[in-house]
Length: 184
Image (cartoon, rainbow, N blue to C red):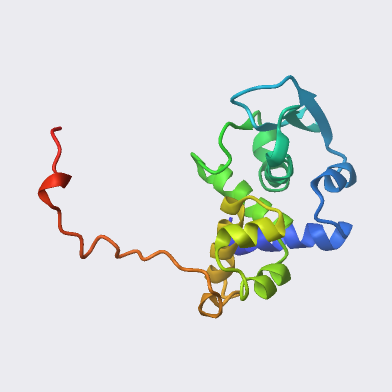
């Protein structure tokens, strides 16, 4: 499964149902949304039970609710066959993925929730990624994933933005000083 395929899948869903709202999509897709008791570790879960699709969400999801729902819709759209075979996708940390399925669901969520046009038009004026995430009302990690994916697909010219790109060679000129040495 390529990242471009995931991008296209998310955008086809948006075009078909004319919405990016996870609650609306859950209804359109006939997925059952079930709330669980508050939890400190589980953010969400996707399961297929007797050919019925379910998203389980703790009732204390708070500000991550929209992101978690979009992520779980990603599992529905990308990994349903694995779930039919008995797999369960459950997240305790959305942005600390442990396998390709979680990464793919995060990429799907980024494309589902954040329109390309908004990123392209707003990135020119935002002073930093935090400001842009706040303006788009999305988690900063989701925004950074979206920006990265758009850049990989040549949909976004980062040179036009004011955002500072991480310098991958920042340690090349580092020279340790005596105070950097610790007892291990």
